[in-house]
Image 1 (cartoon, rainbow, N blue to C red):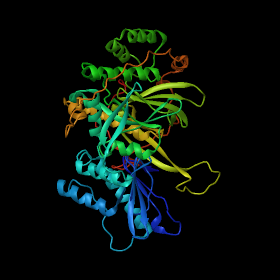
Image 2: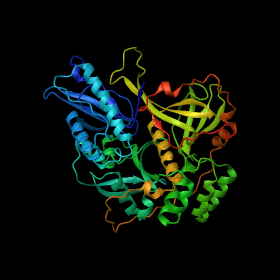
Image 3: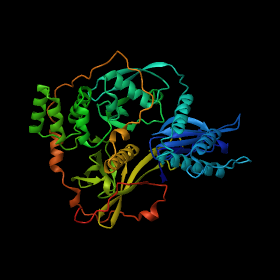
Image 4: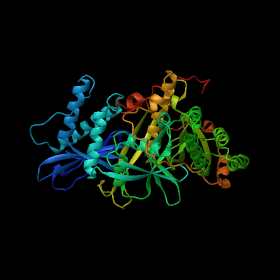
Length: 511
């Protein structure tokens, strides 16, 4: 089991008889996975570095992957050059240690060692609040992404989806970063600059049944056009959605006509998808408000409903309250909500507050696909299993690890981190606008603007959803005996988890 930060490393052999062709991929725990030419590649997390060796030129490269998709390919010398630039700007006391050069050809063991060291380095840089936000670091990854995918800089059109199914087509450059594309969408919709930071772009996958899977939030180190194009799959789209959790900020958004329409469309969509639970009476009220065009009142009623503003993840597996339980996880309102199906078929529900999570980590491991053999994993016969584990304060002085096995584990981790960031800004009396939006170069507004269309009227609620809610009982009633607990100090090192600055020591009375 390996810790998976935003950047990860993989290893896959190009030829069995050539040790240098054994590829290792490095991925830190976050959104990035990168393969690079160099030592063997190993696979571990959201960002992965894969090692590849070119026999003709005797040059090593690493492949960096984001959520299992190739992001870029870079050489050791390029990473070393980046390190030197960052060290020059911030000093050697701030920048983590970089794997040293070697005079002689690396042995397979040394290749793997270097891969592991590069993985730790990339993870440390990305997770550092100062270094991870550095434009030098992010522009390096953007440029490498564009060069690896061999997409020249040119004018293109890019479709951005809204929650109501409407598409906004923006004219951008292939080299435009995430913030540039977000600005272009805001310009097209006539969304004011001071509200742009309340929204983000998300990579989603829409199934044949209309189901929506959140893959990741697009980051500052990637080029949205290149990211979506390189997938070569029409099921993937880029979605505009609000990026904050506290519904108190809805008021800021609703004061503007475009912001109101966007928030209204998202609320209607979440109700239709069953992400927001409504009973028949509430559904009638919502439909009546929708028919009257009372958008603010519709949203205000939505705010009183269960799971308003939550992101719902695909069904997965958890070890709480016992191992092997199927669970549907939702993130919102500064918590992870569990809707668990026990082996006895009984349904239970409960929530884990982010303020009671001492820390969390994302890990990954390679597991063989069902091929009827017991051979070790190979590049074509293995899949990567991701897990999100968090240490939770169950009662006073009693911490317990809870694990979720899901391919969306990294997205869950990002949700937790954004909740913590929002809480800390609010606690310090800072401005969420400054946290959400650090504007650089403004984009010239276009005369061509597009209105947000109103979504169709709500359909009748699914009776099965109400049935599930009735079956649900609180997880608090479940005995915790038999659940594997662990001592965090013995389980993880200081670099293997996300410490939670919003963690609160809570007494038994509050629990």
